[in-house]
Length: 316
Image (tube, rainbow, N blue to C red; front, side, top):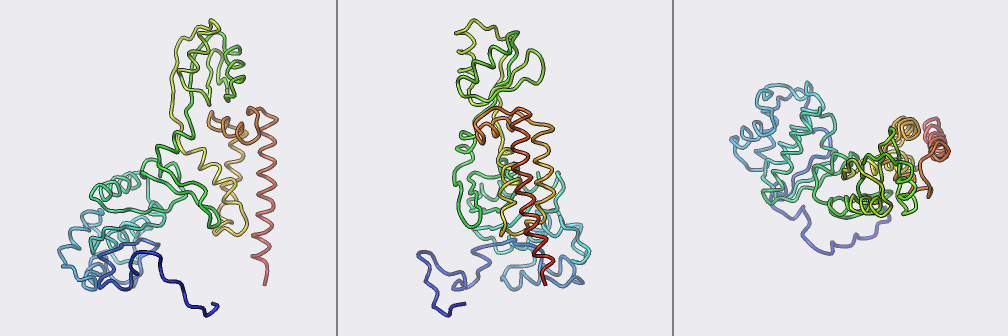
């Protein structure tokens, strides 16, 4: 610390100045801070007393988060998912208008993740501001209205989900007896193309109307045409492979095996989304050659990141 006086906030009111901060902001920032021998219900009643809310609020929230049958379980016996539910209940004790959650889906099974998604949307519909930090971009697509993507303290993207979907674009799948000809025409228009099987084509970068017009202009018969909106999985792969590998980011060691698997998937089992991603990255379609090039780049990043991390771990 330099000892210099901190600058006052540019707007708003410091949380410490509120008489009861828990009625202003609720936060779930990790594990529940409590004695492992204390029971769930007793722990929440203790926190409720500090917040100034009645025990009936505790009973209400235990039902809301699905822990009514767990009220007498000790904190030390909670699974990670149950602890997350308890943290959410604790954050809601003061009925705050603002809720902040850090990786709330951590430790939850698929059923619980759907429950969490519905709960957060319900809280937002009540007029609350719900801020969620997560590396699960695909899940955020189903949960959030707006997203902010950050790396090393810098904002990379801040936009609505609808705007991000528009940027990512869509994939058009079709069936035609003149697959190669249609693929060549689509490539000439700057689209990424692939053919999973004879007679079938997937095109990224053109909508179904553009593909239909292109086929009609050249007398190409289309047996069917379908357009699918792409998800944020492309962004998740990019974040998992690259941003997670940058030295200096927290949890880098945990990303190494994940990034290696993602890079291998890009070469072994590429999808239409991968094809569009590779085209935007290297300016050409996904072929064995370009796939190998991207894999080598990721392998080099992994090697450098691994050397950095494990070198630090071995340091005295």
